[in-house]
Length: 99
Picture 1 (cartoon, rainbow, N blue to C red):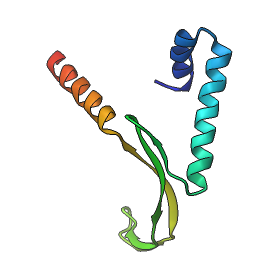
Picture 2 (cartoon, one colour; picture 1 turned 135 degrees about the vertical axis):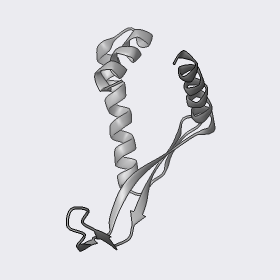
Picture 3 (cartoon, rainbow, N blue to C red; picture 1 turned 60 degrees about the horizontal axis):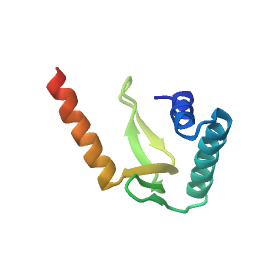
């Protein structure tokens, strides 16, 4: 599912595509800004978004084998909640049975 399909699915529930688009955009924008500011965004049953620090390190170029230095960085991280994990696990079991 991409963003447009998500908006369509929400529009089916709220009845208006414009409202659904504004809601999806507002949620995404709010989560991104909060995480970028160092805040943790927790949505009960869904999961948590947070910023994690990745320290500087050495790595290898897979083509040449040469060692390279990777600068430190910050990255977003998502940890799914228990309800979300359970739902995905059940979906995986159903998909496996179909094969």
